[in-house]
Length: 323
Image 1 (cartoon, rainbow, N blue to C red):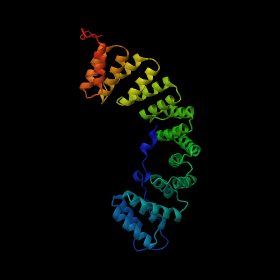
Image 2 (cartoon, rainbow, N blue to C red):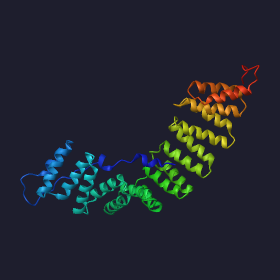
Image 3 (cartoon, rainbow, N blue to C red):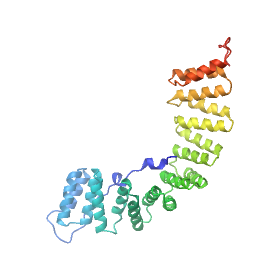
Image 4 (cartoon, rainbow, N blue to C red):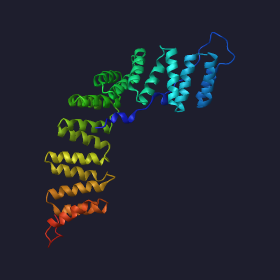
């Protein structure tokens, strides 16, 4: 099962780049290069801003801020390796300043250097213990390294600080699934449904998968159906729900699931094919023939075999007599 969580990652510096203002310098200078750079940065002229921040570095003006702001410009221009160097310099020169450590963690995570990401996030957490973001991504990085217990500790702590993080619930549930602790994984997503107003269809789908893995088929069906209420066009999951009903011997519910889904499906031929198969298993050959024919007309070429099999089962003298 692919973790739904990792498809939604966005780097903090792309949405929340902060530019520090220059404090008063003890030494008079001819021009305040940092302030001039900030003005260009605010107007999204990142190339020009970077030039002024480099001038600030040459002039020795507020060097940690100049490195940090230069890194922001490089990040905005998607020059991420250069930004990594700039943020490292800012962190080295001002180790008690938390912001560079956060962005270093994001960049290391982006490049797949998860051990270094954990180091950077850990340092940020030491400086900003109430921040949930770094705890969440430290947990995600640990999960990438198969450090399930470390991931759980960080993610649980992050969720205590902000219980609205749907992606954090996904990651925490995945850590439990990897340890085959389906009960804990299910409890995690049940908590998400209870506590977070941001619950979406993938939460229910993943919970359905977890119930299915622990052989709680009725609960799995209910979770999948809850998700399909939010995203009814997910026809592959419609087929799964139908198959689960069949595994319980509830062919009527399997058929009802497929027929209900027809109105939402962008690939009705696949659902029609499954409906035809169900009719055929129920020995309702005339209905099967009708449904297979419709599926074939909509492009399901494999329905031809169903048409031929249905014709073979119908009385040759009365093919028009359909139930």
